[in-house]
Amino acid sequence: MFNCRWVLYQHNDYKGNICVAMEGDRINLKQVQPIDKGIIVYDFDNILSSLKPLEGDFTVEPNIEVFEHDFKSRSIKFKDDIRDLRWYNMNDKVSYISVKSGGWIGFEHVDFRGIQTLFLTGDHKMTSSDGVFQNDKYSSFRAIKIAEPLSPVIVDRIEFHLDQANHRDIPVNVFLWRQKNKTNTLQRLSITKEKSITTEDTYEFRWNQGTKMTSHFEMTLGIPEIGFGGSMSIGTEVSHDIGSTQGTKTAKTETWTVHYPSDILPQTELKLTSNLTQAKLDVPFTAHFKQGNKKWEERGTYWGVQYYGFITEFEETRL
Image (cartoon, rainbow, N blue to C red):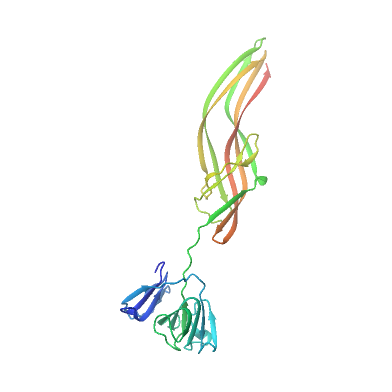
């Protein structure tokens, strides 16, 4: 059974002995001993003639009190399945029943075997909600439980600990130009160079061991960025994959154009170098998760490679 509760009846028009089937049950209606312990055996003697859905809110915590005689006699309260009333010296002694919440199935024998009776919320004075009441003949009770659907897991926010970040810069050459002035007079030059290069910004969320994170998990957030001068800050919020997939890359091709107006002194070599900076970042982070009313934290390290800072340097050497 999946996502439903049904009452099965032995005869037409919802009459005769009943069988209450719940989500997850695998039912064998024959009077045989099951080989698979997951099969709940109901003694219907192979007869099933009518059925109808069982309505009600069964997501609440089930609660039942069974009485030996009337409501003033000895009683026992339960919130979980009772497989054997002999453990409580109550076997074949139940007459009155009070269901505080949920629904319960009473069984003629231990381990949920034999004839069934349905008890819904309310007081039952040798009566039942469905099925034939059997005075002093109950040996086990099963709670009708339907688990509420799980709420989705949500990453509420991610905090990047910039004060604990590691930042390593590596220069990447774009242009290199040399010119010698072997004369004794000043030379005036104007040089223009153009070059297209492809850079790959890479980022990865490395979650700490034991964190159950899916391979892909899209989230809108700002990630650590290196600005001019090497300062680190949180960038503009856009969609990122914060899952456990390694090495998410964003490739871009840019054309760099540089104009060098230069004076070269007599008997001097001039060297002009234009570099980009490749920054490698390791930034610890704390992620705040929630699922329904449950909240918790997970930790990891943001790892990224970025390019910034196109800088030209001049170097003069006497010949």
